[in-house]
Length: 58
Image 1: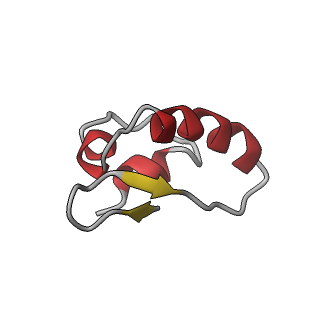
Image 2: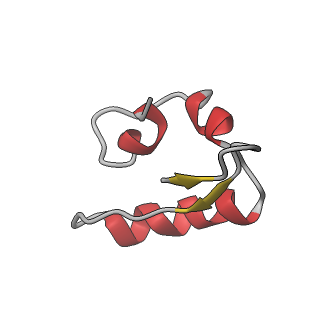
Image 3: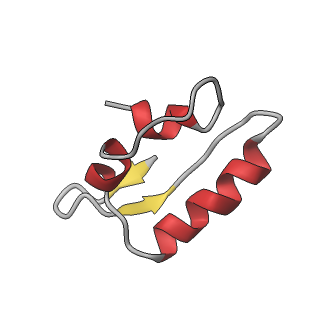
């Protein structure tokens, strides 16, 4: 996850995993909507999934 240091806005994501294309499609919506790292942090993780890694990064 690449974030703007001043605003916290997410400007890019990268993931390597078998499920990555499906996860990136959903994450792309968040990036286009201007969500921030704080928005991802406030999201409840769905466990067990690879996608939970995006909302558990600290």
